[in-house]
Image 1 (tube, rainbow, N blue to C red):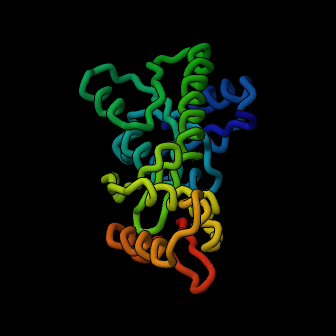
Image 2 (spheres, helix red, strand yellow):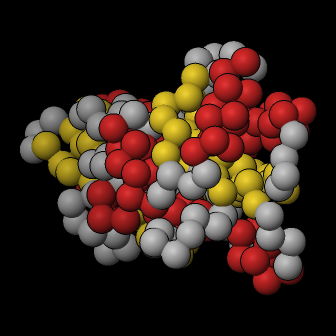
Image 3 (tube, helix red, strand yellow):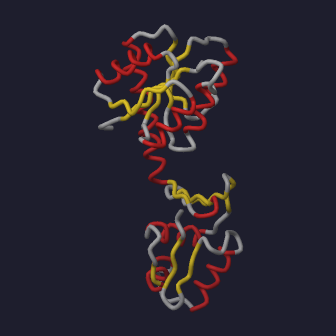
Length: 228
């Protein structure tokens, strides 16, 4: 990934500056070097980073790095490199339980440990890029996995027939644009003409499984799926 952007959260400004210098020496851009929870979230909203290097212990006046990392994921998925002096199992397990963690570096850190940690985080980003290309978010918390032709509502799978899966795939491939009825019928029933009621019945069955507004019918023309 070119032009990789990295956010640094470290309450010790001297250590933070040293990390910043190490990151920039490796050719990466530092979006900001901040010292607490509020500054980190503000920086991520203003100029989203791809990866964050975060200290876990941010002192008594700030939420810790683990809580900060969790809330940053609400802005953008960001692999985290934790920088910590903690070595107790409870703290590390709390950090590792987050799906966003890429790796961690123990203090006192050395500059040579920064480069491999960033490479690990970059590998997480590549996996997410592949996943995001296949996962389509629809309205009202529905998700469709294009690679597997599976529909989910709030992480719960919705059972679809073969024809229902094909219809979803076709409409989603149109990226929210209208697909005319003729194209739909040809794709779903390529072996010959079908009755006018076949597609209506298929849509009726789908709407009994999902919110009615997920698939919108444009009268006398076609259908489209409402992508978030």
